[in-house]
Image 1 (cartoon, rainbow, N blue to C red):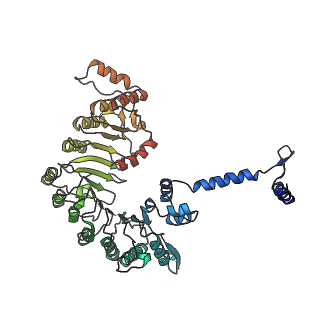
Image 2 (cartoon, rainbow, N blue to C red):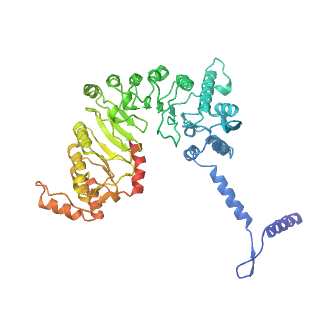
Image 3 (tube, one colour):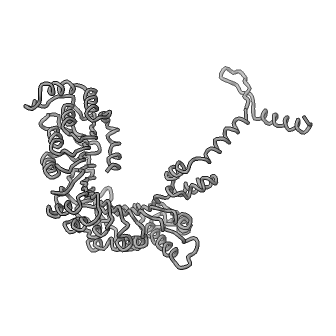
Length: 511
């Protein structure tokens, strides 16, 4: 080996020895710690290099969990991640809230406030505006920031559609297919003695939103929630949307456009609409007659905590529902209540109701209402249940529980395939439900609410063998799970409270 090579080798060994050293252990004995730097460096380089070669599908999924600011910094890591910054799925949803693209500004009267940074917003729109596929507005307090953002987005779209547009404006907003706007209509203070006070959007904010909707000509999903408008504003809410995309709209969500009775006639003008979610106070017989001539497949009548009481809302006429079933036989109606307090769904007699679900922890199953449901929807009802854990105690005596009501529904509604039970029932009731409901596929029951008991009086039609089977398998949870698993054809089990709370997400996504 040459003299130069020996010098390089000795200097490298000396550098490693300088990074190593002696250490005193717990027994006060000296031990020499050596550092194998080459192996550590190779491992570190291998890990870093492997991150660059993640598949695009994985990178897209990772980037969707990041904020726009975090996506920007991640795109600076390497060339591969910079390319992932512009992948389609990454910009499926762009959330705009009170802090999006803002800067702090001190106000003498109000202190520090977050105001929209126009330079950052313009730079952001010029970089990613042509890639955004969905935009969601969720203001809480600063409506001026949302107003200015929508104004800037509208201006950029107009600049991009000029005859000879600048390069930075080309394609901005051209790929937006989804727009969601949740308005915080409850502006009351926590110490307000009068409770909830509702304030609706409108005025200049509504005007700018309508101008933006007029320029989004390829929208297929539009969700406007809790706008609480006046009647004269609600009647013209969708004028621009009908003009721009009456044949392209597929999903329309209009919840609490008003708090009084005000039919929204425009919903019947979207010829290719597939899913419509609307509050019951914004629909009537005339709206149903228009929907009958469309391709609508799912009509969700949703009530939430801001919807008026079910006692003040009138159901649509029987004649109108019969006409809808005759003209559009594939239509399915879904009744849903989302409320933290007690409440009831607005029943629609003669409607083709497919599902009735509650997301209300204080709402009990009432015998008279359930009997009416069975009478109205025994040939169409397929899904029934109460989500969330109850905030009340269920009675234990048999005649005060819901056992007989659940079995009545399974006997009369022969199309029931999904049933969610959260109140107290006995193990024998679960066995009878599994035996009675011929089309039952999904049975979700809280284990904590199931009583080990066979408290059903013997029916004259039951044989001795069947009654003995019922009494024998009602004595343990394991026997009930085994027998119901054999009946349903898959491994069935009772749900813990933790699993039952998770069930809420699954039911929503399934609906």
